Amino acid sequence: MLAHTTTLLQLLQTTNPDDSSTEPFEWEYRAGQATVVKEPIGVVGCITPWNYPVSQIALKVIPALLAGCTVVLKPSEVTPLVAYSITECVAAAQFPPGVLNMVMGTGGQCGEVLVAHPDVALVSFTGSTSVGHRLARRAATTLQPLRMELGGKSGRRSCVRISRHRRRPRTMRRRRRLRRRLRRRTRPWSHNLSNN
Image (cartoon, rainbow, N blue to C red; front, side):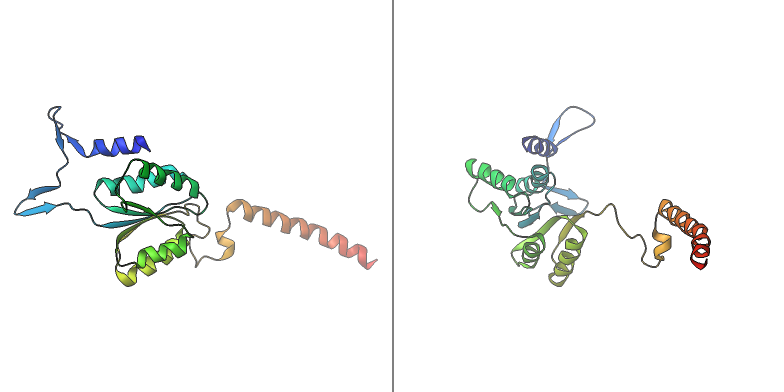
């Protein structure tokens, strides 16, 4: 977690490619006739998955805190002790109360509460596609910004309109054809024995 924090702090300092001078991150700058102001968005809800819990929590919580946002962390119910230890470290570092908050519960139920809450300005979610669909439907009713990284890279169905036979991998179709051929060869023989 310390490595993530160090890297993000280094990213807040931009290096000029022409020389070795380092300029601080610009929160406000002119772009033509406009002035661009980067401000904290407010309360950020972070929903993290069970795999790589320290890394997932760090990659969501640290950037939000560095940008000046308060965070409501909802870790996976499968790995709660990691999140408890991180919040204990934040408390031991004497962060102001309320900067990092943690809620526990199942992904879908707590996620829907975070997405629907009027004080939460942004929700960052990493998890399953089914829960992502539920959260997106809920966020659409309140126009809540929702950033999602969904799982399911090994999808079961690629196209619903394709028949079940065509969806099967080629090796499975070959096995099925081989079984049919073997059955056809044995049927007349067994049929002839039963007739005698």
